[in-house]
Length: 329
Image (cartoon, rainbow, N blue to C red; front, side):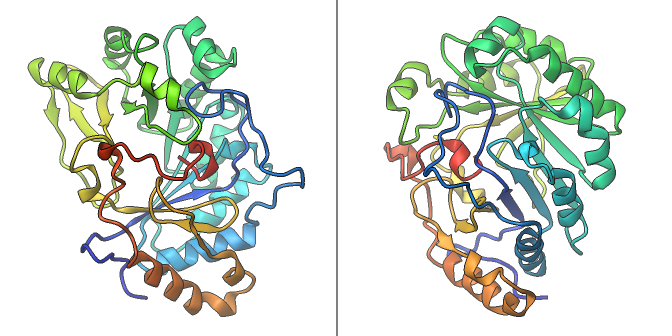
């Protein structure tokens, strides 16, 4: 096995977020309010199945144990089930996750499970169908809810729900969300709205801190869980009276980056050391065949030594990321 991925600040990296497309069929106000707009008019050239195999093999050889398949909307790929199977076949990868808007789950989540998917996150920004439509631009609330039920039927012990906190839109729904997870094994993760290059005005209008939710949880007997090595950035709280859990992702907290354990590869084969702030390192020229594996690993490890100590969001910097779909959120 190659040397464990570690940066110059002694942070170790066990978790790869692998984007397989930047196309999405939703029009969420905080990400793609005008819908997906290709960067150029040529047909996008996303990573092939063979390239996905090679890049995940390289990360697995360096100690990565968890891969999250992201987008855009990853299930828009016709070969999405094959992608899951390819990632799950890598020795050392123990968690294969995806983040989806849920619109194809009811029909396909059983086959994803059989292909090797172990964890699933679904974006649900409101439990009010009208507000769901207002935020996502799509009238698919009931289809997504059916998909979540199908995930439990398929054998997932827990489903994670991602909810982007939006002041004056869904920020008043905490009681409804808490009621929803009381008898369901759902980890509901509230994510603070993050400022990207294309949404300055929306950020200033709708950003709200997760601190008030955390204070409410602690005051009402919720307790903080201990993290595993390959867990994501959420602070997860549990309560003896609830089957579900609450996660808070608060990237504007000062020490958010201290526990960073994840790297990103975009759908076009660039390594991103952070969701914010840099252009990406080209990997695709080393994904053509298996003979370049050692060079690929060397490039990843060398690039990691340039990773900054923080994303500096708490200092008001937004970086170069145009929207969250562009490199997999």
